[in-house]
Amino acid sequence: MDIYEKAAGILLKAKKAVAFTGAGVSAESGIPTFRDPGGIWEKFEPEEIGTVPALLRTAKNNPDLIRRFLLDTVKVFEKSKANPAHLGVAKLEALGIVASVITQNIDGLHIDAGSQTVFEVHGSLFRARCLSCGQRFPLDRAALFKRAHEALDDEAGFRIENMTRILPSCTCGGLTRPDVVMFGESVQQLEEAFQATTACDVMLILGTSGVVYPAAACPEQAYRAGAKLIEINPRESCFGPIVDVFIKTSAATAMPLLMQLVESR
Ligand code: APR
Image (tube, rainbow, N blue to C red):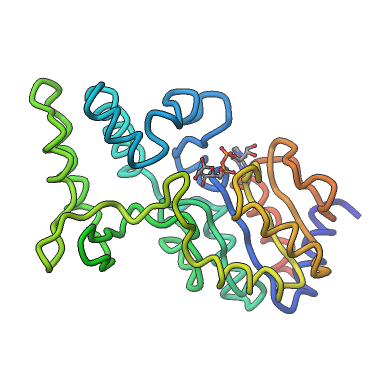
């Protein structure tokens, strides 16, 4: 039996599968991953932009680097849309196979693809958080990207203050920041994610190197809870020893093939 048939068989018997995803699932939506060749951590150092203090320090000492980073991010995200991998995960939920998605991504593409129960453990670029009252609210993408281009496009005119204009102020009048989790900040919806992980009988791991904790503990937790693990990744990750089926290819290639088998049964 080939690995796709084996994986489809496991998914079809699943009572409560969970999808656990990382940057690789959005690679074919044009969003670079972090640790692959040409990835984000090759172009920018985590020490320069990985935490709020680092970002502010770099914004003061090297504002053009921050402008380039933010503009790169805007240009990539405004063009990105859900790819066949995201759509396949959403279809598995619609078929009652996947109960929830735990994603490390901040791109909102699982929700765009139609997934209903999504734990965005590293937050979302399309949600703001007030620095004064802590209130969170969704951001309109078009308005966000329009404000970002106004603040970032003019190389000569860019100043740190421009950054505060990219996001709307809170109704309480406070300044806001993107509701994303930077290094050293607490992860979001972790309790729900860990509950889903320990309750699942199958975990579908898509496109993650599995090196950033606590999110990367999810597959290990599912394994210890007796779940069967299926991984799709063009490269080996650190989950190799615990997965039952390893499909060594890209997510947007593998998911349609897997879905054909799942839906044909
Ligand atoms: N399909 C599937 N997997 C892919 C694809 C693809 N098309 N392209 C790359 N990959 C795999 C890579 O082989 C790698 O294992 O996706 C993984 C990407 O790994 P990372 O870049 O480390 O991304 P991720 O695992 O999501 O990182 C976790 O680290 O920097 C932090 O907060 C950031 O959420 C991020 C976290």
